[in-house]
Image (tube, rainbow over all chains, first blue to last red; front, side, top):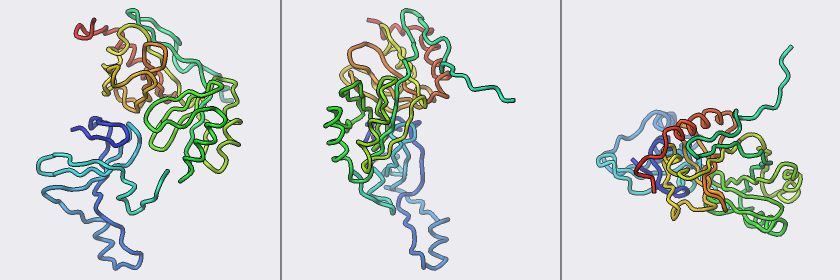
Length: 92
Length: 193
């Protein structure tokens, strides 16, 4: 498996670490306990396109969002995580 | 009583030659990491350009400026400034970058192993997974990648054939061993010209 890092170009899998589901969002502070249980423990197991965090630890050390099809293993896109994260902040 | 700390080279011996290839420890340079604050990159580039005549390279490469300064992109939104030993790099950068970037003295945190000689690319290709073809990885290019299992900043210096491996000092002996083994294995027939 190869991922096309937006900073480094196409690199092989051993440079990356899977860091979990990129679609979960932190609930509001006053959200009910059920929402926090969902956020902390429950994950979807979709068949098809899914967004995941990957960390390019042996390269540019950036967090990336990879859109991958869980049934075909095809990678549809890779982008920097900053814009997608709940902790988004602008750079430059 | 604990033993006193003595300065030691990161690898011994500092230079080896195998099959016409040389692997040598580069002289220690002053190194400062530059982490620009949010939205400060344009002002920081202007400050560096006015003093050293060089700006932070946007892609993974090394740019050379005045007084021996070299700027290498070292991670996403982070750069290393290198200068020859004794240049007083931190003292020169600190007033320039005040309020624009976080500076950290990284001198001696990493060392550079220089692989030189005919076939250096073929030997390096046994360890690194990036394409080293000259049209793809030419002079001045750098890549953050793995050499075997060790993270390195791989760069192709200007004006000389070969490759530089910049590595954390504590990994230098392991990397030196790996490159030495690759050198002793020789150049594959498929790579000979």
